[in-house]
Length: 73
Image (cartoon, rainbow, N blue to C red; front, top):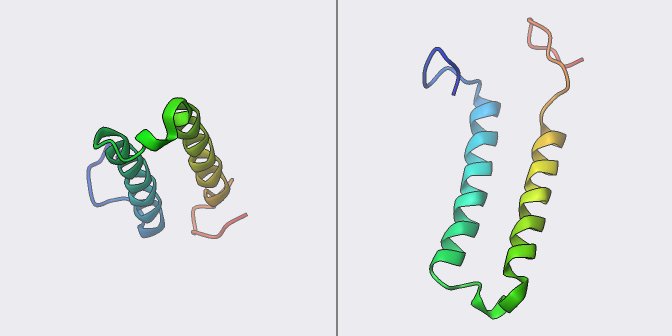
């Protein structure tokens, strides 16, 4: 969260944060409650792949530069 407190992130940033948090939480919950046990020894690698994919998606969705007037460069 920004140093100036909650509720001050732009809506797109909040949506991106919630999406990433939900994805991560869902994967952890599946593992904690044993719903990924059928993957056997592949659980860790599949989790790592899912996190790499999530990070790549986040990077694609964040604009490289936004000017002070809110226009993407």
